[in-house]
Each structure stands twice: as C-alpha cells, then as structure tokens.
Length: 409
Length: 194
Image (cartoon, rainbow over all chains, first blue to last red; front, side, top):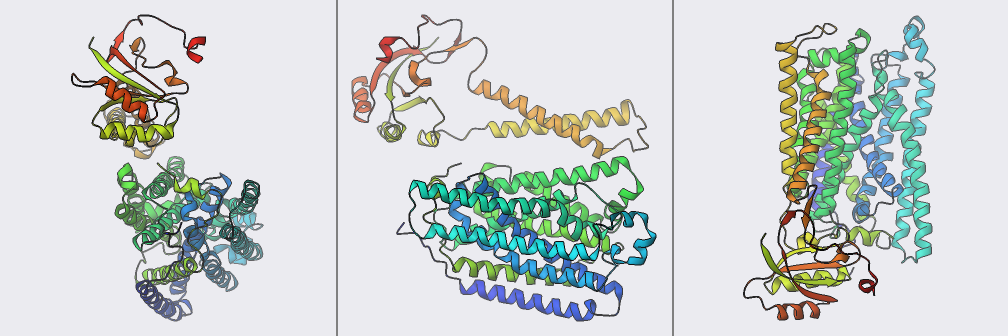
C-alpha cells in the first residue's frame, strides 16, 4: 500500500474553474432573482422560480443517488465499489447543501402561495374543485413543508451516518470478528437510508415536488421515472469523478474493470429509464383520456416537441448504441463523454418535466437555465473536491477492499 | 476422423496452473485447451484467446428481430389487413413497441443459444474425446497439441517441473464425431480415486 496516494490535493485549475462557474452562476442567479423572481410580472416570477426549482431538485436527487448507490451496494455486500467508495461519499456530502437550497426554494414557493407553480396552493380554487379537494389531505402546505423538511433532514442524517461508519475503516486492521460486526452495522445503517429513500424518492417526493405542478394530473410511473432519471445521472457523476481522479493520478486501485461496472449501471439504467418513459407514455397514448393526455399535449405536439424527442435521443438511443460494447464501457474517454451527455440529458429531462408544465406556450431554455446550472455545477465541483481532500481516498482497512482490488469483469 | 497426438498435464490447484500456462506458452508449445471443473477468472486471457464474437452475433440477431417485427407489423396493419382500433392511426408505433421488443429479444436469445452450441460443437449425439475423467470434478487438465517435432518427454518434464501432478501422452480424435465411445468406463472406480 506504500505507493498508493491517499491524500487528494485540490489542483489550482479545479478551484479556478469552480470559482468561475460559481461566479457566473451566482451573477445569473441574482440578476434573475431581482429582475424576474422578485419582479412584478407573475409570468417572469414563475419562470425564475420554476427554473431554480428544477435545477435544485435535479442536483439534490443526483447527489443523493450517490448515497443510494453506496447503501444498496452495502446491503448487497458488494465489494467491487470499495476502491472508489470515497468518491460516492464525497458526492453525497452535497445532499445537505443542495437539499438546503431546494428546501429554501420550495418553502419560498409554498409560503408565498405561488399558485401559478403549485395550483393546489390556491385555497379558493381547491374549495371549488372536487379533484383537488380529494387530494387536499396530501397536497396541502402544512404536509408539504413538514414532509419536505423531514425528507431532506433524514437524507442528510442517514447519509452522514453512512459516511461516519466508512471512516472507521481507516483506523486499524480488523480481525474476522470485528469485520463481521462492522459489516452488519454498515448494513443496518444503509437499511435506514434505503427504507427512507423508498418512502421518499421512489414514491412521495416526486409526487409532492414535481407531479403536483400538474395538480389534476397523475401517473403511477412518475416517481419511478424521476428516480431512474436521477439515479442514472448519479452514476454518470460518479463515473465522471472516477475518471477525473484517475486522470490526476489518484485512485490507483480502481481500474477499467471498475469503470466497466459503473458503465454497466449507466447503460442498464438508461434502458430502465426508457422502459419507465415508455410505460408512462404508451398507456396514456393508448387510453387517450383527455385528463391524462393533457400532460403530453404541449410536450409531444406543442412547442416542447424538439426537447421531448431530444430527451429520448440523448437518454435512450445514445447510451444504447454507444455504451453497448464492452470496449466502450472500458474506454475512459468514451465513458467520460457519455457521462457528460447523460447528465445533460437528464437535466433536460427535468427541465421538460417542470417547465413543460409551467411555461406551456414556449421553450424558455436560455441564459437563466445555463446560468443556474453553472452555479450548481461549480458548487458541486468545489465541494466534492474539498470533501475528497478532507479524508483518505481509500478506506484501507475495509474488510472488502481486497476483493475490490481483485475485481475483474 | 483425424487422429492427433496430445500431451496432457493435470494440475490440482489453479494457483499452480496460471504460471504453468505461462511457462508452456513461452516455451512455444500450442495449448489446445485447459479443461477446468469451474469457470476460472482470467484463464482465457492467460491462454491468449481472443474475445468471443458472440455479443456481435447477438446484436445482429437482435436487429434482425427488430427489422422483422417492424416490417411485418407495419405491412399487416397498413397494407394487408388495416383495422380501425379505437380510432388510432394505422401506423401506431407506440402500440407496436412491446412486440418489436419481444421479437428482438426472442431472435437474440434463440440465435445466441444456437450460435453458442455451434461454436462449442454441442448437439445431441455429438461425442468428443475426454482427456481426463476428473476434468469435470477436481482437476485442471491442460492439453497441448504435438507436432512432428515435439519431444513429448521434454514436454512432460516441463509440465511436471511446473507442478503437474500427472502427465501422459494421448493419441485421440481432435474434433467431434457422431456415435459412441470405444469403451464406456466408470468415472469413479476405486482405482482412480486411490
């Protein structure tokens, strides 16, 4: 182990780039906030808060997906990912930060009673509307605020507990008995996260945060669709950081065999995402009931048509055809390219999920979207790098590390 | 039936097997195959075998299935027997996707199984020479092809020096044949186990 670089030193270029991105992003964010967000035009308000909302929700779910990856791997006693688990941990440290931003944005939207974003916030409209009245037990400000706060707090807390137990593997070699107990404790902790993840990301949270924008409409596929979208983007983010660290000469123990399996996740969950996309679309298309097709009307036939099909092209056809070959998943350049493409594709996916309902008439993709995206990317780069630098890069006494080093695909 | 001469070396440990494979290959001998009781990770690389093309075949079968499904359904529903189903257009692509998918999977699966059997020369009634009975149980059996110039004694000595617990020379059928074995013998007679 002597030759392993355990300590990450943040390169100057990374800092420069992230500060530049944060600077540009913050400028766009603040300019947008004061000209649009707090402006007098309601249409502009919806534009700004909607854009900020889908960006913060996207990045919260994507960074949370890294912790989900760690937890289900721990639960399945997977060993192969141990050699780069600190990358997933570092990405998951962003959950409190991005979750906090999401919480602030959602609190502002709900407390300012912006019923142009969440129609169910309009008490008068709800009183006259039998459908919304029926949903009022779930779609009401009190429940929304409590559940959102609880969700983000517990994601952060359970994630923190998982990262803490990972640090125990840095202290001293474990004998068989200690290692066994360590594994059991890790599995219990990951269990808490997984159950809470199932209750939130895989069900209630996408309903509350995203689906309730179309308050009358519902789809039973929606939460899984959101989960698949954020998970595949999360795997792409892990792949990107793994490749970056390899390029800088760290992560010696992770090889193209590890990248191959990360690539398999990117490939498989792109297909899974498409499966859910299609299951949602096909049933609504087939039944052709106006209350249901309203969601797709402006997306398939209206101004969002190019974005809608671009989404399918980037997130389905490209991963399917490009990542299918074994040699493609083992090629660092190609996986890096695909990871960026998938992250961008699912960002576009979240864009059309939110803005396709808020700005039905025209596509608003512009400086505000890319500015806020730059802000989030900048924060992500800086904070992940800091988190990586604050801990050893290898959990060197982890019971499964040896198996991970020998991993071969 | 082409008879050939082979030198067979048996190993009881895969950690001994890998260096032995390397030694035999660097000495310039041609290894026909190594028969193992279970799939050994990395042995195909050690033997210098090329990557299988089964995936590529699978992809071709898959797109054949896709093409078959798309052309068949579109011809049936738009030309041959157009039906009005719930007022949907005749060319109703979303409704076809499940069937297109199923045919893709079916073609790929059946095609790959048949190709696999063909590549491995497996079929009902096909017989092949067994180099060692215990290859399916607990021995790693390395089979080396001999040429006219091969000195079998040298080769046996090399194998033994690299940890083979048993070596012998066999003249056997190289490929496969239909029919029976010359003599059927018990896999587990007491003499062999002892």
